[in-house]
Length: 324
Length: 303
Image (tube, rainbow over the protein chains, first blue to last red):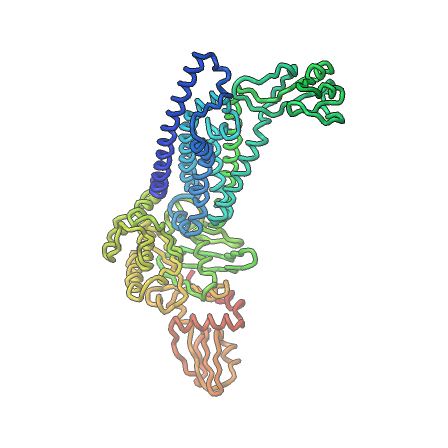
C-alpha cells in the first residue's frame, strides 16, 4: 500500500518539494541579508551606546515584499489538506476508482490508514520544513521587534505549522469521505481551517494559561520583557474600575481623564498623572510572558492534532459504515 | 452441487428507492451466469452487494461459503469489475499491475502483460489516454489477474465493439473452463451472451423474475400459438408468462407443468431471448410480476 501511495502521489510530492526549494532559496537570500543588516546595526549601536533604542529607530531588516511573503507562508499548512486531503477519498469516489481499490485484497481500513498516514506525514514535514526556514529567517526580526509571540509570527514559526497541516489534511480527508465530492470538500476544508485558525489566533490563544497582570505606577510605565503576548493594558482606579471621563471629556495617553484631575488638563503641558496617582489610579498590563512561547506552541499544536485525530476517527467510521 | 452464490430475501433500499427487493437466487459453482434485466432493474446493486462494496438492508447472501465481508481473505477470492471501468487515469497499465501485485496475495501480473501484448495495448501509457475498449480490456485483465474464484462483471461488454466482444467472451469461457471459476456478468441484452452462459438470472423492477440453468429454462418453456381462443384451460395446467392476442391469433409463452395436450395449439421451443423478453414485458405490463417473481425464483431447480 505504501508503494501504491507513492505511485499515485510522486508527482505531487515532487511539485511540493520543488516549490519548497524555491521558497527556501528566496528566504535564504533575504534572511542572510537581514542577518547581515542586523549584525552591522548591533555593532554600530554598541559603539554609540544606542542599542536600547534600536527597536524604535526605524531600522528595516528586509523589504515589505519579503515580509509579506513570509506572512503568506501561514497558508502553507492548508495547501496539502486542500489539494491532497480533500480529493483523497472524494476523488476516488468521483472517478469510481474506489471500486478498483477496495476490491483488491485489502480492507478499506488499511487502505485509509496507510494512505492517510503518509499524507499526514508529508503535510507535517512540508509545513515543518517551511516553518523551520521561516523560524530561522525571523530570528533577527524577532530580536529587533520582539514579535515572536504576535499573530502572524507565532503562527508561522516553531511547531504549530506542522500541527495546522496535520489538522488541514485530516479535515480534507474527512470532508471528502463525508461529502463524497472533491469541490465541496475543498470548500469545507478552506472554511473550516481558516475559521479555526482565526478563532485560535485571535481569541483562544490568549487564554491557554492564566495571564499575568502587573500593576505599575503611572509615571513608570511597565513593559513586559521580550516577546510577550499582550492581552490588555490601561488604567484602573482605586475601585478596580477603569477611569471614567469627566465632563470635559479629556483624554491622556489614550485613557479618559476623570473629573477630579481635569484641572490638570489645561495649560501648555497638561499632566494629570500625579493627580491620578494621588487618587489611587494605577496602570496595569495583562499578558502572557515571553517565556511561555514554547508552552503555547505545544498547547496549540496539541489542540490541532487532537482535532485531526477526531476527524480521522470519523473518517474510519464513515468508510466502514457507508456503502462504497 | 455446491453453490458459489446463495442469497435469500436480499433487499437493498436507498432512502426512497428499493434497488433490490427480496432477491433469492442460487448460482452453482463453475457456472457462467448471465445477469440480465432492463436498465435500473437492480443488476448493479446485486453485484455490489455480492462484492461486499455495499451492505444489504435486509436478507443475506452467502458467497463462496460465507457472507460478503471486508476481509483480505474474502476480497482475494472475488474479482469485481464495475460498470464505469475504473482505472487511475494518470497511471499506466504497468502501474496498475504493480498496484495489484502489492495488494493481492495471488497475483498474475504476467497474464496481464501477455493479454495486453496480444491486444496491442501499450503498457506504458496513462490509462486515461487509452480508448474505451482498451481500458475495458485492461480492467478485465487486471480483474482476472487476481485469480478470483468468483468473477462479478458489471456490463463488461458495453464499451467493446462486436469483435472485441467475441474475444472477450472467449477469454471468459477459457478462464472458466477449469471449472473452479464462477462468473456472473450483467448485460441488458441477452443476445450478446446467450452462447457463453449456462445460467441465467433475470431481474426486472428490482425483483428476480427467473433464476436457473439455461438448459432447464429452455426445457421448461414453450411458445404456444393457435387461433384466438379461451386460454383458461391452459392457465389451469400451466403458467402463462405472456399472452399476445391479435383478432385472429393468440401466442402464449408458458412455463410447462407437463405436456400440452390440446392439439389446437402449435408448440414451439423458444430461445433464451424470447423467454427473457417474455418475462420482461410481462413484468412491465404489471400483471403478475410480484407473485410470478416469487414463484419463479424457485425455478432454479437443482439445489
